[in-house]
Image 1: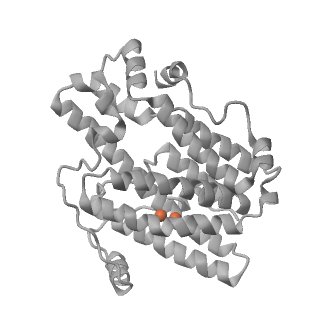
Image 2 (image 1 turned 90 degrees about the vertical axis):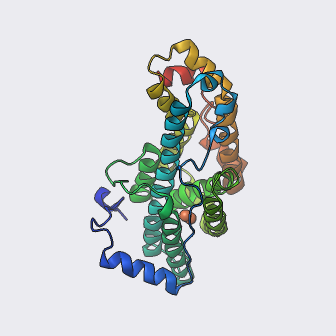
Length: 305
Ligand SMILES: [Fe+2]
Ligand SMILES: [Fe+2]
């Protein structure tokens, strides 16, 4: 089943409170959904420790207003990513609903679609209103491509097992390290649903369908490469603020924020999820040399310059 690109991330309706938006809110309320309020007002839900910046000498030398601008933009990046992921989740559930192989499966994906809509709704009070469907981050675009173009096994493995599985630990960290009580509650609520979504993927995937699947393999390697490159967005945001950041200082920054070991930890989590769902033998067929290893500091430097 093929979905057109313009069906992927949709525009919001322009009027502030459109009739359909009101109907969405009424429907959520009828299903017992209660919105969570934010408790902090400066928009810094995650601070310097979350990004490992507290360990950086360059960071410590910046002015408070520079730090604020970098953290503000990084917070916005995180929330934008979450916004697109939850949007993609709704489309994913709709696609899997259409290609479901039993009535029970169809029921599951109907519920999953509702839950993804609820996740998006619960994030709304924290989101900047000017997110547009035309400015999609590259990681979300890749996820969108898998959903729109991938076959059933590719979707089950890459989206439901790998990304939703990874999302569990990522959202847990977002919850634990957020300065906002409301935000913590939102992510802890979402995790409960994502645990079921991930488990259903493991149940539904027939391992043999992942063999000799070139779409799956290519999309899988592209996804890992997007992780291997390290904290690209963070380094770009710091460079924007410190215009003349030399190669030497960029390298020190990469080293002080433990970019390589942090990236290796993320890859190790993805590898564990892959091993659990595919088994060693199949996993070996998937592997290219070094695909589970972070870029070295030198390679990160080249990629970030
Ligand atoms: Fe979700
Ligand atoms: Fe989900």
